[in-house]
Image (cartoon, rainbow, N blue to C red; front, top):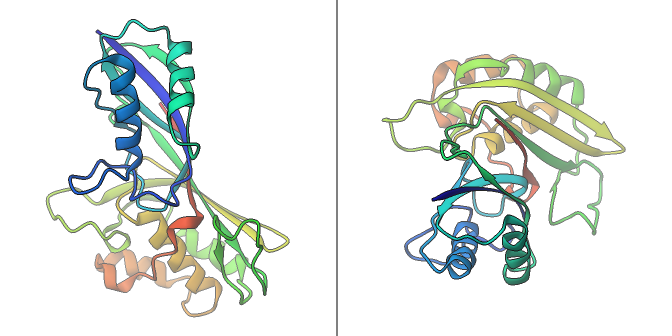
Length: 245
Protein backbone atom coordinates (compact mmCIF):
# COMPACT_ATOMS: atom_id res chain seq x y z
CA UNK A 1 0.00 0.00 0.00
CA UNK A 2 1.30 3.46 -0.95
CA UNK A 3 0.26 6.90 0.29
CA UNK A 4 0.38 9.53 -2.45
CA UNK A 5 0.34 13.27 -1.85
CA UNK A 6 -0.79 15.57 -4.66
CA UNK A 7 -0.84 19.36 -4.98
CA UNK A 8 -3.66 20.69 -7.15
CA UNK A 9 -4.46 23.97 -8.86
CA UNK A 10 -8.02 24.57 -10.02
CA UNK A 11 -10.40 27.17 -11.30
CA UNK A 12 -13.56 26.57 -9.31
CA UNK A 13 -15.83 28.71 -11.51
CA UNK A 14 -17.89 25.93 -13.05
CA UNK A 15 -17.83 23.47 -10.16
CA UNK A 16 -20.07 22.92 -7.14
CA UNK A 17 -17.10 23.01 -4.82
CA UNK A 18 -14.48 20.50 -3.80
CA UNK A 19 -16.54 17.88 -1.98
CA UNK A 20 -18.03 14.91 -3.78
CA UNK A 21 -21.86 15.15 -3.87
CA UNK A 22 -24.43 12.39 -4.09
CA UNK A 23 -26.63 14.24 -6.58
CA UNK A 24 -23.93 15.69 -8.87
CA UNK A 25 -20.63 14.66 -10.43
CA UNK A 26 -19.65 18.29 -11.02
CA UNK A 27 -17.15 18.65 -8.17
CA UNK A 28 -13.37 18.86 -8.10
CA UNK A 29 -13.04 15.77 -5.90
CA UNK A 30 -15.21 13.67 -8.22
CA UNK A 31 -13.33 14.69 -11.37
CA UNK A 32 -9.97 13.79 -9.84
CA UNK A 33 -11.16 10.53 -8.29
CA UNK A 34 -12.55 9.31 -11.61
CA UNK A 35 -9.20 9.86 -13.34
CA UNK A 36 -7.16 8.35 -10.50
CA UNK A 37 -9.43 5.29 -10.27
CA UNK A 38 -9.02 4.60 -14.00
CA UNK A 39 -5.27 5.10 -13.69
CA UNK A 40 -4.92 2.75 -10.72
CA UNK A 41 -7.49 0.16 -11.77
CA UNK A 42 -9.11 0.41 -8.34
CA UNK A 43 -11.48 2.69 -6.49
CA UNK A 44 -9.58 5.75 -5.28
CA UNK A 45 -10.84 8.16 -2.65
CA UNK A 46 -8.88 11.34 -2.00
CA UNK A 47 -8.73 13.47 1.14
CA UNK A 48 -8.06 17.20 0.80
CA UNK A 49 -6.67 19.69 3.28
CA UNK A 50 -10.14 21.23 3.39
CA UNK A 51 -13.26 21.76 1.33
CA UNK A 52 -13.56 24.79 -0.90
CA UNK A 53 -17.05 26.07 -1.65
CA UNK A 54 -18.72 26.31 -5.04
CA UNK A 55 -16.92 28.85 -7.23
CA UNK A 56 -13.83 29.08 -5.01
CA UNK A 57 -10.38 28.47 -6.54
CA UNK A 58 -7.12 26.95 -5.33
CA UNK A 59 -3.52 27.61 -6.24
CA UNK A 60 -2.12 24.87 -4.00
CA UNK A 61 -4.76 22.52 -2.65
CA UNK A 62 -3.18 19.47 -1.01
CA UNK A 63 -4.72 15.99 -1.01
CA UNK A 64 -3.65 12.40 -0.46
CA UNK A 65 -4.86 8.95 -1.40
CA UNK A 66 -3.85 5.35 -0.76
CA UNK A 67 -3.30 2.91 -3.57
CA UNK A 68 -1.72 -0.39 -4.57
CA UNK A 69 -0.88 1.08 -7.98
CA UNK A 70 2.83 0.66 -8.79
CA UNK A 71 3.02 3.43 -11.39
CA UNK A 72 5.92 5.86 -10.77
CA UNK A 73 4.80 9.23 -9.43
CA UNK A 74 6.05 11.18 -12.46
CA UNK A 75 3.84 9.02 -14.70
CA UNK A 76 0.89 9.58 -12.35
CA UNK A 77 1.34 13.31 -12.80
CA UNK A 78 1.49 12.97 -16.59
CA UNK A 79 -1.61 10.77 -16.59
CA UNK A 80 -3.57 13.32 -14.55
CA UNK A 81 -2.46 16.15 -16.82
CA UNK A 82 -3.62 14.24 -19.89
CA UNK A 83 -7.05 13.19 -18.63
CA UNK A 84 -8.22 15.90 -16.22
CA UNK A 85 -10.17 18.90 -17.55
CA UNK A 86 -7.96 21.90 -18.36
CA UNK A 87 -9.24 23.87 -15.35
CA UNK A 88 -7.84 21.26 -12.94
CA UNK A 89 -4.08 20.60 -12.86
CA UNK A 90 -2.18 18.25 -10.57
CA UNK A 91 1.02 20.24 -10.05
CA UNK A 92 3.02 17.64 -8.15
CA UNK A 93 2.81 14.02 -7.05
CA UNK A 94 4.96 12.39 -4.38
CA UNK A 95 4.91 9.26 -2.26
CA UNK A 96 4.77 10.06 1.45
CA UNK A 97 4.70 8.24 4.78
CA UNK A 98 1.58 6.17 5.38
CA UNK A 99 0.78 8.36 8.39
CA UNK A 100 0.45 11.54 6.31
CA UNK A 101 -3.12 12.92 6.23
CA UNK A 102 -3.82 16.01 4.13
CA UNK A 103 -6.47 17.37 6.49
CA UNK A 104 -5.43 16.26 9.96
CA UNK A 105 -1.75 17.14 9.53
CA UNK A 106 -2.36 20.63 8.12
CA UNK A 107 -1.05 23.32 10.49
CA UNK A 108 -1.61 26.61 8.65
CA UNK A 109 -3.81 27.51 5.69
CA UNK A 110 -3.56 30.71 3.72
CA UNK A 111 -6.44 32.15 1.71
CA UNK A 112 -6.20 35.16 -0.58
CA UNK A 113 -9.17 37.30 -1.59
CA UNK A 114 -9.01 39.71 -4.54
CA UNK A 115 -11.01 42.94 -4.81
CA UNK A 116 -11.11 45.34 -7.74
CA UNK A 117 -11.70 48.75 -6.12
CA UNK A 118 -12.03 50.99 -9.16
CA UNK A 119 -15.05 52.71 -10.70
CA UNK A 120 -15.09 50.22 -13.55
CA UNK A 121 -14.22 46.55 -13.45
CA UNK A 122 -11.23 44.97 -15.15
CA UNK A 123 -12.47 42.84 -18.04
CA UNK A 124 -9.51 40.47 -17.73
CA UNK A 125 -9.84 39.72 -14.01
CA UNK A 126 -13.61 40.12 -13.57
CA UNK A 127 -14.11 36.37 -13.11
CA UNK A 128 -11.58 36.25 -10.29
CA UNK A 129 -12.19 39.33 -8.18
CA UNK A 130 -14.97 41.19 -6.37
CA UNK A 131 -15.72 44.54 -7.99
CA UNK A 132 -16.43 47.25 -5.41
CA UNK A 133 -16.92 50.56 -7.26
CA UNK A 134 -17.02 52.88 -4.25
CA UNK A 135 -13.67 53.71 -2.60
CA UNK A 136 -12.65 51.56 0.37
CA UNK A 137 -10.89 52.95 3.43
CA UNK A 138 -7.99 50.53 3.76
CA UNK A 139 -6.82 51.96 7.10
CA UNK A 140 -10.21 51.28 8.69
CA UNK A 141 -10.25 47.78 7.22
CA UNK A 142 -6.83 47.08 8.69
CA UNK A 143 -7.92 48.40 12.08
CA UNK A 144 -11.01 46.16 12.00
CA UNK A 145 -8.94 43.13 11.03
CA UNK A 146 -6.84 43.48 14.18
CA UNK A 147 -9.84 42.37 16.26
CA UNK A 148 -9.91 39.09 14.32
CA UNK A 149 -6.32 38.08 15.07
CA UNK A 150 -5.87 35.32 17.64
CA UNK A 151 -8.07 32.52 18.94
CA UNK A 152 -11.77 33.34 18.90
CA UNK A 153 -15.16 31.73 18.57
CA UNK A 154 -16.00 32.59 14.96
CA UNK A 155 -19.61 31.38 15.10
CA UNK A 156 -20.76 34.77 13.76
CA UNK A 157 -18.55 34.27 10.71
CA UNK A 158 -19.79 30.97 9.35
CA UNK A 159 -22.91 29.52 7.74
CA UNK A 160 -22.15 26.17 9.38
CA UNK A 161 -25.47 24.87 10.73
CA UNK A 162 -24.43 22.11 13.10
CA UNK A 163 -23.87 22.91 16.77
CA UNK A 164 -21.83 19.75 17.32
CA UNK A 165 -18.61 21.08 15.80
CA UNK A 166 -16.37 23.63 17.48
CA UNK A 167 -16.41 27.11 15.94
CA UNK A 168 -13.20 28.14 17.69
CA UNK A 169 -10.39 28.95 15.28
CA UNK A 170 -7.10 30.85 15.38
CA UNK A 171 -6.20 33.51 12.82
CA UNK A 172 -2.49 34.25 12.74
CA UNK A 173 -2.33 37.11 10.25
CA UNK A 174 -4.54 39.27 8.04
CA UNK A 175 -2.73 41.43 5.51
CA UNK A 176 -4.52 43.96 3.32
CA UNK A 177 -2.55 45.40 0.41
CA UNK A 178 -3.72 47.92 -2.18
CA UNK A 179 -1.97 48.52 -5.49
CA UNK A 180 -3.77 50.91 -7.81
CA UNK A 181 -7.18 49.72 -6.66
CA UNK A 182 -6.27 46.04 -6.77
CA UNK A 183 -6.77 44.96 -3.18
CA UNK A 184 -5.48 41.65 -1.87
CA UNK A 185 -6.62 40.37 1.51
CA UNK A 186 -4.58 37.41 2.74
CA UNK A 187 -5.69 35.44 5.79
CA UNK A 188 -3.64 32.76 7.57
CA UNK A 189 -5.13 30.52 10.22
CA UNK A 190 -5.22 27.01 11.63
CA UNK A 191 -8.52 26.26 9.92
CA UNK A 192 -11.59 27.83 8.35
CA UNK A 193 -15.28 26.98 8.39
CA UNK A 194 -17.93 27.15 5.68
CA UNK A 195 -17.97 30.65 4.14
CA UNK A 196 -15.77 31.97 6.97
CA UNK A 197 -13.22 33.85 4.86
CA UNK A 198 -15.93 35.27 2.58
CA UNK A 199 -17.87 36.52 5.61
CA UNK A 200 -14.74 38.08 7.08
CA UNK A 201 -14.08 39.84 3.77
CA UNK A 202 -17.69 40.96 3.37
CA UNK A 203 -17.65 42.47 6.86
CA UNK A 204 -14.32 44.22 6.24
CA UNK A 205 -15.69 45.66 2.99
CA UNK A 206 -18.62 47.13 4.91
CA UNK A 207 -16.12 48.72 7.30
CA UNK A 208 -14.17 50.08 4.34
CA UNK A 209 -17.34 51.59 2.88
CA UNK A 210 -18.13 53.33 6.17
CA UNK A 211 -21.20 51.17 6.83
CA UNK A 212 -19.66 49.77 10.02
CA UNK A 213 -17.22 51.01 12.62
CA UNK A 214 -13.99 48.97 12.99
CA UNK A 215 -14.73 48.52 16.71
CA UNK A 216 -17.93 46.59 15.86
CA UNK A 217 -15.88 43.50 15.04
CA UNK A 218 -15.33 42.71 18.71
CA UNK A 219 -19.07 42.91 19.39
CA UNK A 220 -19.85 40.69 16.37
CA UNK A 221 -17.51 38.02 17.72
CA UNK A 222 -19.12 38.21 21.17
CA UNK A 223 -22.67 37.84 19.81
CA UNK A 224 -21.88 34.49 18.14
CA UNK A 225 -24.70 34.77 15.59
CA UNK A 226 -24.33 34.88 11.82
CA UNK A 227 -26.88 37.70 11.41
CA UNK A 228 -24.58 40.24 13.06
CA UNK A 229 -21.73 39.80 10.58
CA UNK A 230 -21.61 41.34 7.13
CA UNK A 231 -22.51 39.96 3.72
CA UNK A 232 -20.82 36.96 2.11
CA UNK A 233 -18.32 38.19 -0.45
CA UNK A 234 -18.61 36.47 -3.86
CA UNK A 235 -16.88 33.11 -4.20
CA UNK A 236 -15.05 34.09 -7.38
CA UNK A 237 -12.52 36.29 -5.55
CA UNK A 238 -11.31 33.60 -3.14
CA UNK A 239 -8.24 31.38 -3.59
CA UNK A 240 -6.75 28.70 -1.35
CA UNK A 241 -3.17 29.87 -1.69
CA UNK A 242 -1.09 27.66 0.59
CA UNK A 243 -1.24 24.78 3.07
CA UNK A 244 1.63 24.21 5.50
CA UNK A 245 2.38 21.00 7.43
